[in-house]
Image (cartoon, rainbow, N blue to C red; front, side, top):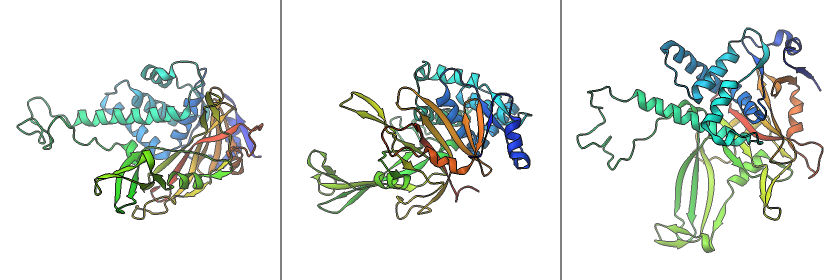
Length: 376
């Protein structure tokens, strides 16, 4: 296995390993662990090598520097951290994301304890928090200055003709443009055959997993047809009554970056606790989305894997997180302060195990795929 380790200041090993192939202007930095912050470090590395996400944060930091205005919030802390990594004179090393971690803990009490945290919960919290900040910024910048009447403001105090305090649609932020996709929930009445469709957006998809399966089969199960009967009957507007129906979820609008969360932690009623599922789930380097609607733009959208957040350990309440990242056609392994270059074939060792009790407890947990169509 082709692997070189970088620890602390010995980054020259990684530089030697890459030699002339070290990407121009790229930086490979480990992140210091403050006791139990591997859940945060692993997600941050995946997001740093999500190029459109990184570019937006670097641009935000640059704009804040020019304007001299920077609120102390999670967006500012993250953009400063990414800028700090990106502007290092050295190509490799270690950075302590202390200010960012402090802000996370201040913002959300869930992450204040020294208990083992969940990387997926952190990713959800972070993306949603960034959306909230960007929406507030957009709202503030569109507010009329004192004495002005907003063009959308009507005499009776309603905006855009929408009464009763309903707000106009929230702005679409760059987080949405990168991660957001649309699902369509189709329900077909089995009596009158009428199809009712309801759209909902997502920033990531959580998938149930099975032993000896693949991401493709997990996605297929996600979109499988479910029959609604007995107590679960569907109220059909056309029939004006409860009817048996068939329901299925499909991807209507695939996102630019597809984040997939494998539900490896399952509550077992007999045990009265959560258990980690070490199932082998194959995640391909190239993925074709097969569960899109017929009219979806880019039906059978193609994606390329660029990052994997890995959970290491046998249970849900303890363990460790690391990440695998693809950068300029090289795969890298990030384990807090340590960085290694790995061969592409090593990725498959994180699929999971075919046996319930195995020495291999390093399993893919969150997968990040980039759309090949929307890449450029």
